[in-house]
Image (tube, rainbow, N blue to C red):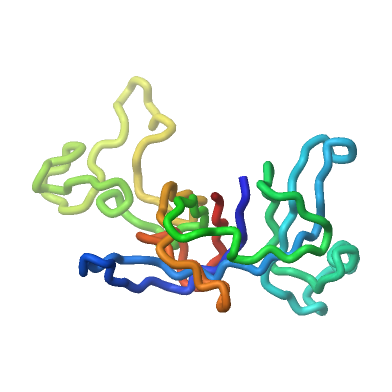
Length: 205
């Protein structure tokens, strides 16, 4: 599956030929350097390791610097492996946004925005007093009863309760590529993708 590492720039909207306003996300996709070529003989599987976004040398380990030096490039902040790449690539090759074409569909994976510690109404969609969820009667956003009494005398695993929300790996599938701006390495994709501005995303064909 061919793909690229990118950075989410933000959201905007464009008009199509019928005058309809379409919300879309702008992603800086590549250029990515092939930093390692995995082979069946050596690694047991075939894959391409791509690196994206230059990193300061003083913030890199000697091992990492040596690894990137073999590919003839500087240290990279983000490294991802892609299996079943459509085209054959060599160590040190540059892969840019031109592998995508307008109109095709892609999957975008990223880490969702962290929302901190949240209650059950925001985290799980509990109804509160209006819908009398979980038995509370006079507290607007409380979770209500969470367990039985003498038996089983415990709270079952997986009970929906308050806790940390967001910060999960999320993949959004079948997003249409609206525009490919090759000279600026930009992809304009219909809809929204996970993550905050300037967060790394993985785009797969």
